[in-house]
Amino acid sequence: MLHVLSMQYGPLPSLRIEWLYELCFLCPEHRSWLVTLWSTPDPRQRFDPVPRFAELEQIPNCDSTERVAPAAYDLWLTQRLQGLQGSHWLDQFDFQAATEICDLLGRTLVRAAFPQLRDMSPADRHAAICRAFNILTEAVMDGDLLPPAILQRKAVV
Image (spheres, rainbow, N blue to C red):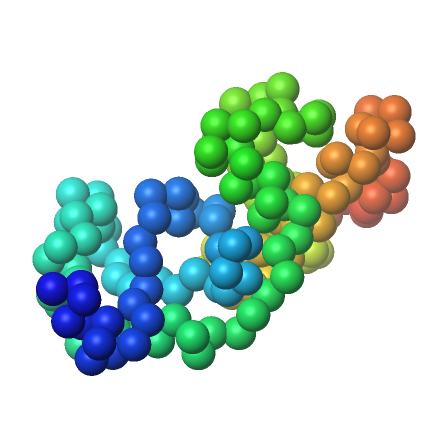
């Protein structure tokens, strides 16, 4: 069936388990943003792709997406999702904790008030996470316990 669909629609989108992680925004290999194909609050339905593919009205064209250079965060995330440990300070923490600290710190650094997720586009959230990742990995490599970018930030009351 996939062969018939690919003949009709051209290159088909792929679904990889690591792309289901909320803080994964692009595929470094193909240099393209991930596209939300469906959203449903019930995890049993959300992670069952067969009925979801049947519900799609149009299959997105994989070749039409903008090409994006992967950031250091994206390459690190891909390695961690593959079970590889790097040499970053964040690698001493479990996967969930390491990615969450990048998300929370990034959202804190980009706005005067902590932004809610509904207030951020995926690209803005990705940029914030990448900024936090760079700060955390560079600061620890320089031997700083608290990065200057965090120390210089004014507290929001």
